[in-house]
Amino acid sequence: SSNLTFPGPPACGPGTAPRPQAPSACLLLCKNTLGERQRRGGKAPSTGAPMPKIAHLQADHYRIPLPRALEDSMHGTMTVFEVSTAWVTDSDGLTGVGYTFTCGVNGGAIHNILSREMAPRVMAREADLIEAIWKDLWWAFHYGGRGGPTVLALSALDMALWDLKAKRAGLPLYKALG
Image 1 (cartoon, rainbow, N blue to C red):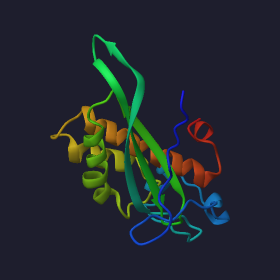
Image 2: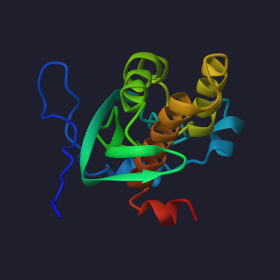
Image 3: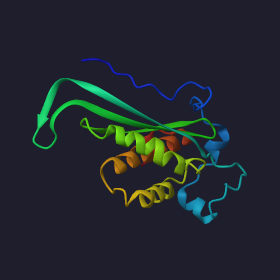
Image 4: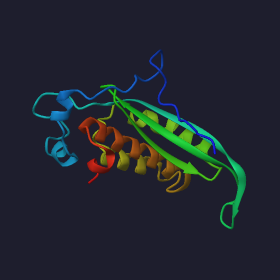
């Protein structure tokens, strides 16, 4: 068995996202739920601290060769697994990661949907408005496909946003989700 490592977002430089950093004390004190944000009409919390916005979405695509071919009646012969990752960095420099996988096909499509189609639609959106972002993307893409690569890309992005929210709260994802 081989150890596979998945790199994080690239180092800082032209056209790259900043490296993840520890959350600021202000952000930890200014946690808001979607319901609280909606009651305020989507405005920043009363402390005056602006909510972080999505600054960068990086999509990566990995093809992982299997040590031997696998075969089943649904997927046929599989010689690789594909993993697609979504790295969402907010305006405070924190990064959340989400992923999805396939049995060797459509990973490139997932990568393209994330990087070419979804990224421009989420830039500068408030990162905490996860449900609103999900609904907007669902309806924006529903004619192009309500399954397959489109939903797998949406899943990776959704997971990255929840991971980012948990990191800002200083909690492991499983605790943040309850």
